[in-house]
Length: 234
Image (cartoon, rainbow, N blue to C red; front, side, top):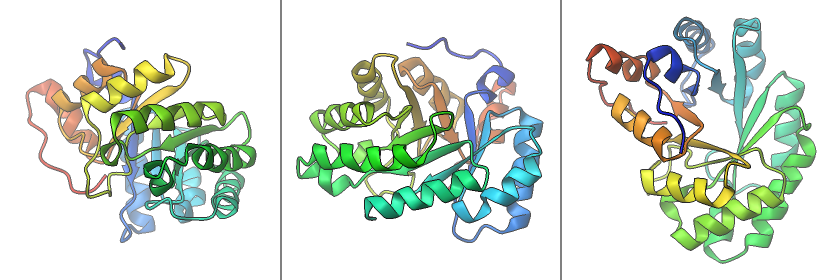
């Protein structure tokens, strides 16, 4: 279990401050980066087409993450690998890839491992690869098997959700199970539906080492006794 942050500054360092809405504009990304820097988050997470813009706007103030095969995961592995490689070339520090959830549901964990391995080969060892498993769409046994496949393929993190799947986002149970499976060897990112300070702290207590938040300011305001409003999407 992780030590639960007791200040806004401590919690902010867990956060990938996220904007993945299709209608996002360059101005929105600039605002995201500026807000993230002001809040003291670890990184911003943006769509692949915005990586260069985010890197330029960040100017070294925070890390830049992006997504790959997002949000369905239903892309050929070589396409995911090419997308990840391009994002790294554009300056991304971290890549969050989506597995083929259907392959996992069908028991094709060897296919999941090969998919992750293909992207890992395209993402240098000094860059972070996170694997989005859509935990809400998987059984406990499937979560365990997918986490093991991701670890075997060289991932740095396993991540609960895209935040766009109708089955839902992160849950304390899924985070606990993921943490128990990877045993501290990989990071755990909780994302999707983490909208309040209580949510964030519960995920960290369960074992999350990173949080994907789109409403970061509202969550951090919980330390001042301000309830976070609901945030659509991620």
